[in-house]
Image (cartoon, rainbow, N blue to C red; front, side, top):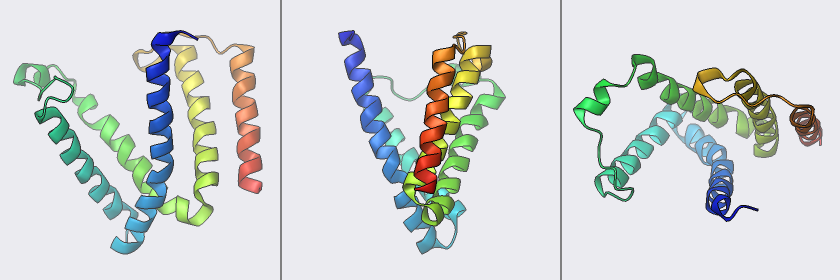
Length: 153
């Protein structure tokens, strides 16, 4: 394996494990607050505070964006990522307590991989074209089969 890939892969694995816990925490929060949308609001508010502190503390040596940088951002990019994230958090807060975290993630990851292969294959949203080869499609198929086993299991 390429040593330059080790740190990014480890970080993705740690992030994946952390994300696996998110629906359970947000489900509890939704129950306590009486709404998955309220839970998403609290979750995103905490995320904003953490990201602001990280940026302000120069942990990543980037600081806050300048006015010139902010002005270059197309209007749709101000909303799409956050909207999709809010949909994910609210959906996870509502569904995970009902179907379980395993079934939630099995379905989510299978759907993510199918969508990701399509994004790559067609070069959508500015991604470099990476063809949907038989191996990639077969891998997604096995993941869908695995998701079915987890959901039914």
